[in-house]
Amino acid sequence: MHRSNLSLKSLEIFRETARAGHVQSVARDSGLSIGTVSHHLSKLESTLGVRLLDHTRRPMVLTAEGTAFLGYIEQALALLHKAETEALSGRLSDVRSLRLALIEDFDSQIAPELATLLAKVMPSCAFTHLTRPSHEILSLLSGRSVDVGIATQPQTDPDGLRAHPLLRDPFVLALPMGASMDPDSYINGQTALPFLRYSDEQIIGGQITAHLRRLRIDLPGRFQFESNQSLMGMIAEGTGWAITTPTNFIRASRFRDRIRLLPFPGKEFARYISVFTRTDFAPATSRVIWTSMRSLIDQHMVMPATHGLPWLRGKLTLLDAPEISSES
Image 1 (cartoon, rainbow, N blue to C red):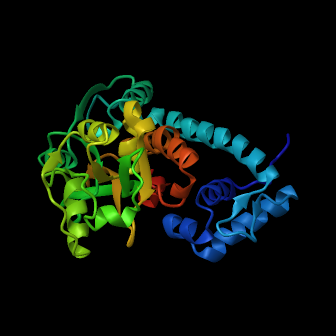
Image 2 (cartoon, rainbow, N blue to C red):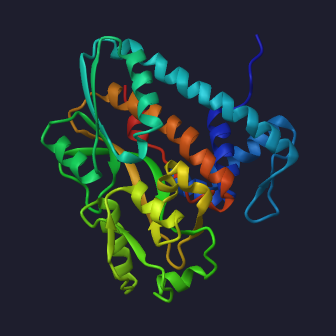
């Protein structure tokens, strides 16, 4: 039997470095040292006997061999994550009920696939799926009305809940496709185009308002939206602009060809999406939900966004949750 000398960790680090282009950002997001990340990359290239990354460029770019290799390992890692999910089914076969609440971001594409995956590994389970804003999800969890929530991390950690990080989702500017002014002009209120806000009752709206306040930026608040689709529709029609995130842009598929995303000018900020459970919730169930969600978010959001907008690499990133990965 042929034994591969390739390390799974090295493959995952190579994939993340290929997306980010910087060893530093991979080290930050994985919790490893820069030296450890560099060691994994060097060992992988040494084992294969080829250069996968052009280390002389900043950000680093893939070589021709690296591009071909990445295509294969993307598929392989996806299969491994799927196998890991299915391997947990023995511990989950006795689960009888699961009440799951997700934010609207995952309602159309990811939620149906998640339900299918969970139904397969929990054959005796009755499922309840809810779609709610993040603040309502956390409240439902605290009140034991749901078992698991997938939501935006609030600015202060919620009492009695455990967060298993999934995604760093950076804030960006969303402008009508024909908009020609530079990003600073919008942030500084130098355009007649109205600023479209997310409702301050939502965590995402509160985060944007708090960041603008820190920057001492005061933008008119004539329009506020709870619905991402309505907000994106107005931008697509050329009647406003917004501060949003790539995942909100990706899921507004009918409007994407009429909206232009640009980096947020000045100091960057991001929202973080996590799987939330109560501290007494079953670790095996937490892990299978986290593993499934991470794979689906990568497939439906991170990969399409970073492929279409390469400047998002290293900014829109999947996160590790060691506290789940080590649970048994």
